[in-house]
Length: 254
Image 1 (cartoon, rainbow, N blue to C red):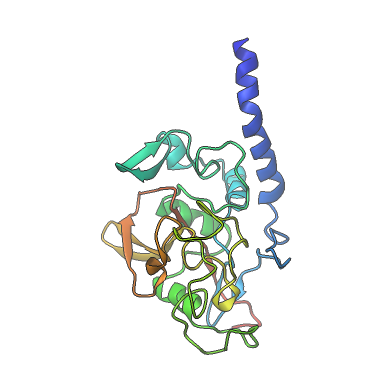
Image 2: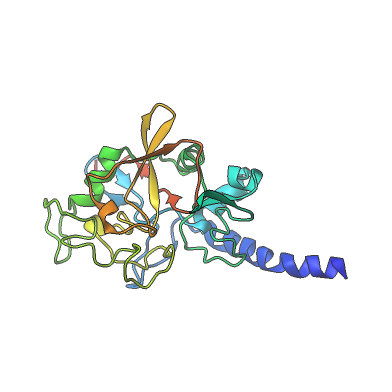
């Protein structure tokens, strides 16, 4: 009877791993937005390229499958969430952000520390963006012919444009926690979730701390602003922190 119960408990996890195997290797075809646009191709900007969305569970799963490298959250008993202070949540990890066994594989990969984000981006042939690059991508429109209402060369007050509407914050929006890739409003440069959803690690260091950008679903829209700075211990991981990668520009864009 005990073996039967264990088998039943393992089935949702096996289904998740199967989904990761199927979806996580789709670096080119990838997920699509509500508008049907492919999200996996990096956006080419001035001097570098950057992921259109935060790295997803499926994408990070492909890295884990290739490297056989468990995360610190998995090794140390689960990721963190803020309750009465920082509280460890057993079973919470990049593949089960809130402890669920059947997480949407397009949700952002969280519960990963700075070194784990760096390792993933290197595996993809990239790196973490600097704060300066991240801010330039998030607020200044650089596309040659951006769709209305965006205007080439303009720096916007919010990553979503003239207002924070459409971002996943603690305000009145459709998402109680993190939103999957492409579900929120596409913002400046066609990027998703440069404001809110989850914090994003960048390369900037201050002693043993590393900078995170953009705010998260736990906060109001004030943390989406360019002036906001949040530094966290490099070894830290939590349900609110993810990342995206930057790359050398394509030859045609350099």
